[in-house]
Each structure stands twice: as structure tokens, then as C-alpha cells.
Length: 155
Image 1 (tube, rainbow, N blue to C red):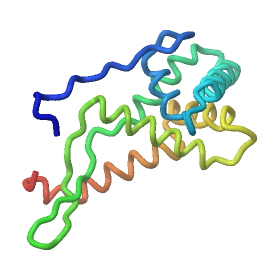
Image 2: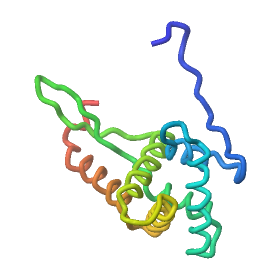
Image 3: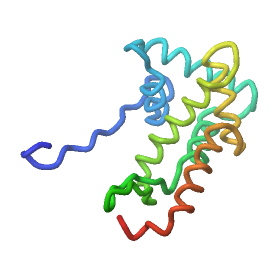
């Protein structure tokens, strides 16, 4: 922990084509082994496929998908008298977005399919429509928080 005061909040940069911070956040999460140009290709091909499938603005579909997957509450493990209890905690918008992006990418990687661009586009379209693995993950998280509501006072 720094002794020189709180760390400065970093703002995400915008990507070169769409000038969108959300797209850049997604690219940085797709990134593996430092191959950023490959991550750009994957996402831009996925956006093109979304445009072909839905005939609407792909950035709106992306924004809608992330908004639908973003959790409002989650559980955090707390150690209380030798027992680990799952305590429901509210999530900020930034953390929620990060979780949503992570879940969408994990769900798209698990999908069967030809390539990552195809799988990502399918998952984003499904998430925007309110179905898919990422939506299921969010509902599961909310259910867990609801089940452990009795421990909410342990925050």
C-alpha cells in the first residue's frame, strides 16, 4: 500500500476505430500473451458479425449486452469465528462492468464454434437478448446473494 496517499483512478482509453472506452476495455480483456493486434482483429470481426446478424448498430448491442450482464450485488467471503460466510455486498458500476466483461468472455470461450470472433458475437447477441451463459452467471450470483441475505449485517 502506498504511503503517498490514495492511488489515482485510471481512465480507460478509447479504441482507435469506434472511439469507445467500453470497446477498449473488452479488447484488453481478450488480450492473451500480449498480442493486442490479434485482440483487435477478434473484436472487430465480432462487431462485423453482430452487424450482419442484427442489422442494427453493433455498439448498441454491445452496450445492451454488458448492461444486462452487469451484476448489482455479489457475495464476498468473510471469516467470522472460524467459519467462512458468504456476505452479500453491493457492487459499484465500474466493478460491475469489469465482471460483466469477464463473464461474457469466459462464456464465449466455452462456446462451441469455429473461431473466437464468431463465439464472441453469438454470446454478445444472446446477452443483449437476455439469454446465454453470462446472463446465467449473473442470475446465479444474485441468487447466491439473496440466499445469504441473513449475513448482510456482517459487512
